[in-house]
Image (cartoon, rainbow, N blue to C red; front, side, top):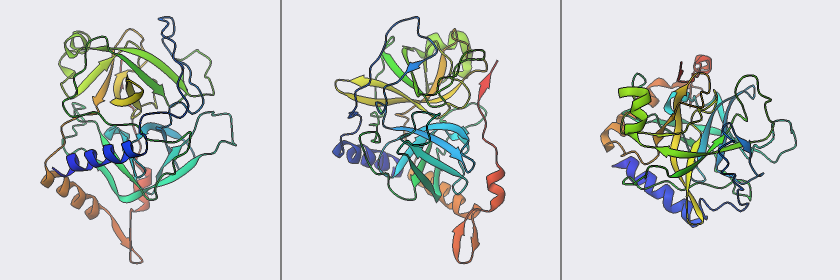
Length: 295
């Protein structure tokens, strides 16, 4: 399986660079009163990605998993040539941060072949960077989990809020936010969401993701390292703190080789040749991304 080999390679490459061990340690509060986020320590979540359009508008989050690859949600509808990967962003009010703004390889926005936008199953996409990220104390990768990862009810998870946002009516902080969440079992999550929750998803909460945080990381700590456990997928429309939010399992079983090959062929077929170079038509930039939240 090509994608399995790819993910395993990324894990090994990340490990050689000290993946999931932030040079700047995060400081966490486990107070139950903090349900909508608290300021993260600058640089303590170095794999955090902001996906932005050419106007600098942030529409989704993501996670750096190697120097050349980012993982995000399929429903973010990332379009190479129109959208960009921003690394190192922490303070929205600052224009002097040492950011890395990277393009996405033209035909390497790889959506999971079993992605179903109706059911939200397998809401996962890999993005290959056109040029490698340069690791710093504020930019480094997160490790991926094994495909047979066992998650226990009540496991403590950390969700990074890439939009730096709060529910309507609250003051929007400028700095990156973080929330400590308990894992919720699929069966318990189904008590709220019903059959919409499948085994390709995990639930945590309750603290619903604000719009724009789709694709961002949900991580858990193992010893001194952090592992990407989930990818923000869908939840309530109003950041309902009583409803568990749903995340794509980061350890999803990968698709067969031939399906991935067909996917890449389809991506190339959608591209147009201009002046001997392969590029996407400008109309592709008009595609809108969507948040998958419900009332």
